[in-house]
Image (tube, rainbow, N blue to C red):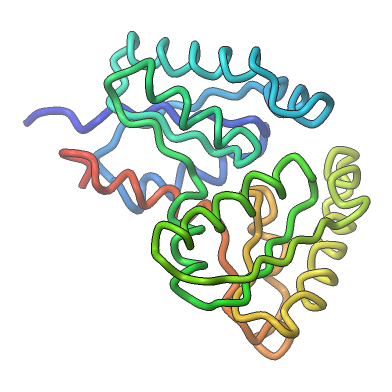
Length: 222
């Protein structure tokens, strides 16, 4: 029996390999994932915006993955999603943005779309991606964006409860008056687990599940 596809899962947050490992196993059980973490890619983007050198470094990671025998790369950081797209020109293997399916689902679910992030560096590219998907689909949408002040700092300081509470409060506020709520960062996905459907009466989309599900399309992944 031939081995399943080898997949490089590239992260910029140290906690995310533990989130994505079971998701890859669920959606692409025959895949052989290995995880790479480089927090400096996100740190540089937060501090300086989308630098050409960051895009070059990401392209180098992708090229190294191909040289290591990877059949695909999944980039789990939405802040560097545009750089992930640019990296496709350097390799012959798929380079997947984790938030691509989420943005497509948002456009399918409604016209009034709210995008929530804890970092402006992620908010801007995610909102841009949603608008681009809407344009591709020929749909008119309105996109409202918001950040959660202090949530990112709380997570970095290890105060997970404070991080989750700030996200939950803003999510409840945004849900009113919108058709769908998009959480822009994979690290936000668990923050709303304690909320009920009454608290959030609209669909809430996160990127880890649908992002990992893309790997099921790889030959031999299932």
